[in-house]
Image (tube, rainbow, N blue to C red; front, side, top):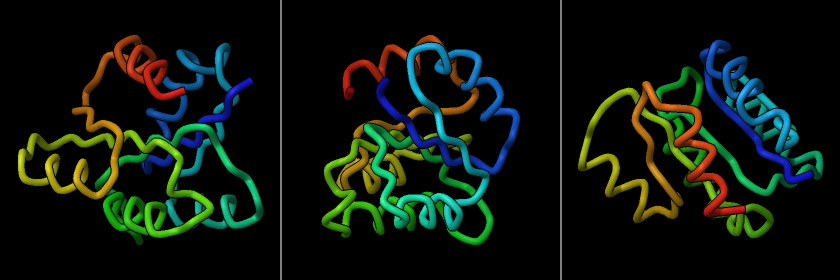
Length: 119
C-alpha cells in the first residue's frame, strides 16, 4: 500500500482525509511539520506528502524548501494546501518543487484524483 504523509495543523483535515484516503493509502498524519520531519528523519519515506502552508512553528513553504533541498526526500511529490488564493505564492511554491497547489476548502474526491497523478 502506498504511503502518504499529511501535515496540517487542523486535526479536522486529518480526520476527513483518513476517511477518504485511508482505504487506498497508508496515511500518516502530523499536526506539526517539526514532528513530520522527525518521522522522516527516522527513515520513513512516503510516496507523497500533503502539506498545509499556514502552520505554527514552521510554515509549509519552509517545510517544502527543506524537503526539496534534502537528497533523501527531494524526489517525493509534495501537494500544498492553502486557504488563501495567492498567485504569487502558488508560483513560488510550484517553482520551488511543489507538485500541486490546492485551495481549501477542497473536495476530497478531487484531491484523491490529483494524488493518483503522482503515485
